[in-house]
Length: 259
Figure 1: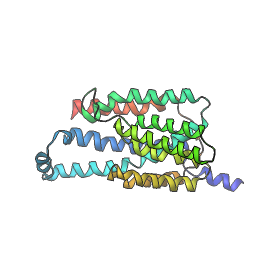
Figure 2: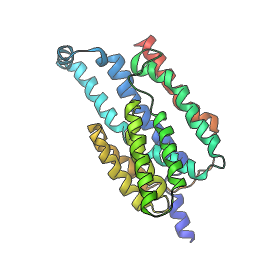
Figure 3: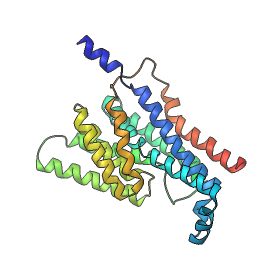
Figure 4: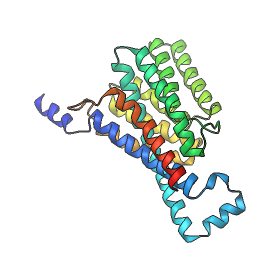
C-alpha cells in the first residue's frame, strides 16, 4: 500500500493540473486574442486582404505561431472538464459551486469581448466558462438519472445532445467539446483508463466542429499522470475563480492600448 501511495504522490496533483490547464489556456488567448485579432487584425479582413497579409513573410510567422497556439489551447479542454467533474463530485454545496462557476462566466464575458473583439459587447461568441456552466447542467442530470436502464440512458444521451446544441446556438467558445468531454469524467471517475480513452474519443469527435480539436486528446495525457490529490496548499477559491477574468482583462486592455 505504501508503494502505491508513493507512486500516486509522484503524479500531477490538482494544483498542478489547474496550473497547466491555465497556462495552456493563456497560450490560446495569446494566439487567438492578441495575435489574430490585435496584431494581424484577421477578424476584419476579406479574402483578398487575408491573402495579401499572408504573403508578407513577417505576418506569416505571426499567423503560424497563432495557429500553433490555437491547436495547443484545445488540449486544455479535457483538463478543465476533469476539474469541473471533480468539483461537482467533491463539493459539499452544489448550489454554491454552480453559482461560483456561473459568476465566473458572467464576469469573464466583457474582458473576453475586449480581447477577442476589441469591444465591450459582442454576440459573435461567448467565453468558454459558459461551456462549463452547461457542463454542470449535464453532470446534474447524470447524477439524477445515474441508474442503469434504457430510460436513464436515453435521458442522459438527450441531455448531452441538448446541452451541445445550446452551446452551438449560443456560440459558446469551445462549449460543444467541453459538453462532450465532461460526462466521461464523471461516469468513469473511478476508472481512469476508461475515462481517458472515452474522453479522448469525445475530443476527437469534437474535431467535427473545428479541425483544431484533432489535437485535443493530447490533453488526456496530462490526465494519465493525474494522481487525484489536492496538493499541499489549496489556493484561495476567490483567486481561482478570478484568475481567468483578470488575465482576460489584462490582455484585453494591453492589446487595446499597447498594440
